[in-house]
Amino acid sequence: MCLAIPGRVEQILSDEPLAREAMVSFGGIRKTVNLSFVPDAAVGDYVIVHVGLAISKLDEEAAAALIATLNSIPAVEGTP
Amino acid sequence: MKHLTEYRDSQLIGQLLKMIAARVSQPWVLMEVCGGQTHSIVKYGLEQLLPAGIELLHGPGCPVCVTPASTIDQAISLARRPQVLFCSYGDMLRVPGSGHSLLEAKAAGADVRMVYSPLDALALARDNPDRQIVFFAIGFETTAPATAIALQTARAQQLANFSVLVAHFLVPPALASIATANSSRLQGLLAPGHVCAVTGMAEYQALAARYHLPIVITGFEPADILQGILQCVEQLESGQAYACNAYSRVVRDAGNSLAQEAVSTVFQTADQEWRGIGIIERSGLQLRAEYQQFDAGLATTSNAPAAQEECISGAIMLGLKKPQQCPHFGTRCRPEHPLGAPMVSSEGVCAAYFQYH
Image (tube, rainbow over all chains, first blue to last red; front, side, top):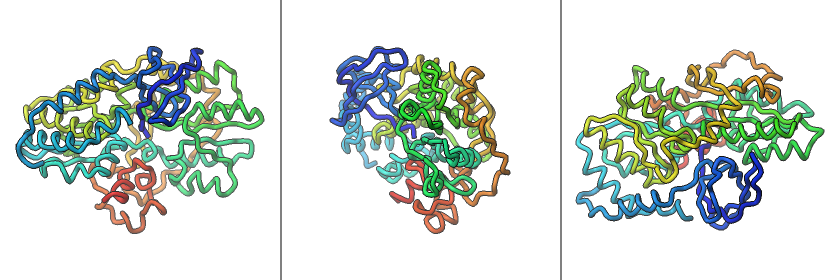
């Protein structure tokens, strides 16, 4: 139910209050999303979308830092 | 898909599993709160990959599962009215109330539609001025802002034919009651990432301090969940207990202030019944006086006594029992004939166990 997926903002369609809308691409599937809660999201940004509304702008630096950190740790010995 | 598939990488997952194994010196019992996390854990077989000492309890984070049977009965009674066009998220349609489900009501002639968003229900209200559109507003803090913005829009546009049946739940009060339950074996919590994307971390910091419980804000992909488990185990092994954020690409410490504002403009907290669990103080939302004109719940009452349910969903969602410990699991209770909500929802723990175990 709390499923929310990342999509890339492709085009801002409206800047109306309560109805800031954008065309967002989810791996090629495009859908209109309400961006009222992420006013700073711009074309090219990734937003986290839940029931038709973006609830967060994805922090790409934090995402890249996590992946880089995990990949840079030398292999730990032992079996999981 | 970018920002999803990276977190399903088998090498990354193997590395995280080794890091967890290297850190664990004794058994620990953790609970993942959200049904989406449960689903990932069971789907990717993470329980089987983790060191034997790590036990995962599955929490109450499935809104469809905790929505009271009496509220579903109210939904059905509204849906049966000839002028009503009843809209619901798909998850909710097959969940039985005390007798029937919304899908059965639809089969019997009620106009029940599945919608993806409350904004779709609003559009139906605009397109069908001669019908009463009722939206079944269920969900946790993640979902309440969407209901709020739909109601703010309905109020601004003076849509008189739109109303909502509210069953919104707040996670922290439920976690507090789990943490204080005598029978709880819980030692650490993986908090629901998308709930926290809205609410922020403050309430979880307070819970961690109050119950001396490590809490890690955790995402939903397998690598996210293992990262949450790793940070939780690190706290437990070093005797610490605080709230930290393992899902920082999505969750800001303060959450989403605009979404919080929308929710507090439209709703106030209220006591709320959780199906199978009972009433938890201040764990739900009700419409403020300015929005009561949109309250479909006022148009119907449900005074049926709470029926004795065969489903042990309460014990399942509090982490006291696993699905296989229910005598009906996989026999009388199956996804095509559920005795209770956890077998219905795609996020219900019984459905996940049935599908993947």
